[in-house]
Image (tube, rainbow, N blue to C red; front, side, top):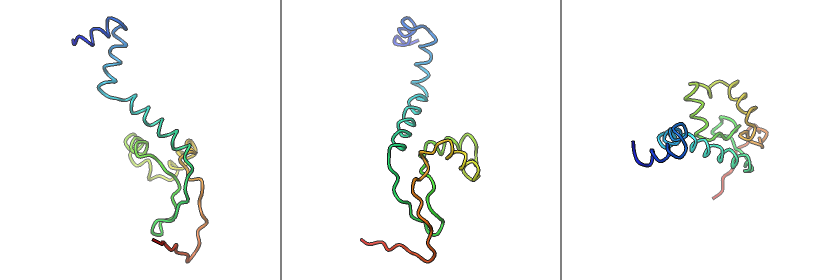
Length: 113
């Protein structure tokens, strides 16, 4: 056992020392804190207008990559099912786009430099 680990055991006990060492190895709580910070920033940020993407429709939500991949890893194919996406957005409305323009048939935006 290393000297620093032994001092943790002496001061806080083996259960706390093991939890601290596990956190050093995995970083799970650090990732959770980063995700919570991103969650707070996302809910505080006003959403911009969303345009259509090559005729595929409008952006319905802005989901951070870590949340997307956590769900995809836990339940493969989660994001392909529309009912799952709708459930997720009901549980987390801060990720839903606030503004959705009405589609206009035959209208193409002109981009200027």
